[in-house]
Length: 262
Image 1 (cartoon, rainbow, N blue to C red):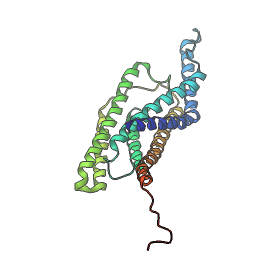
Image 2: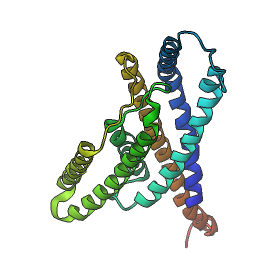
Image 3: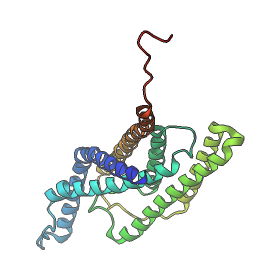
Image 4: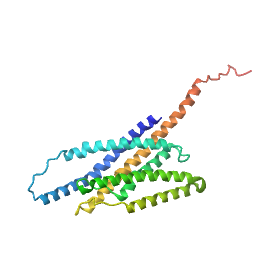
């Protein structure tokens, strides 16, 4: 059972990554190109053209084709596998809802925890633009926010389930959501914010890049939740129908004698 869920999650993750890749090519890559042009122009100004440009280790064409495809597929497979594990843990424990609804809720929770919580404090910046002196600290703080999002989401679910008998589903959900928002807000307020953008970088390009990055994640998580839920719901129905079919096939049919009973 768990093996089939993992395989299904990874396949759904690949499909989600393929759709997200289209968004990355259309909206994300142009902003990356603008950022690289800005960095090259700034470097040329600082060196006054007195130094030869460094040779590219990986060409820009390879970066936005094979490199981007590989990164998205690996990310999709990893997220899909973890999503399947989260679904297996949540199914049947967050109310009397079917596989599709459970997958949708897990996708929403994962999106909030992994994307929204760190995005609000440390939004992504285009490559070649961030301050290289703060890469290490920014990476640590970002993954710390991801951990906060995951732990906070898990805690909110536990609180909601424990308050459910006393407050009802609606009020328990509101209390848990407000508590989650308060904790995240407090942590955001007191965590440092290192310098991540070079002076003079176009604000429009930065904004468009961040919106594109958020759009990629929205498409990936939405596709993953919807596709995984539909496939799992279908698999569950097929699995439940098989025993009934086997039972009916082993029963001998009742044949009435010719002319009816006498």
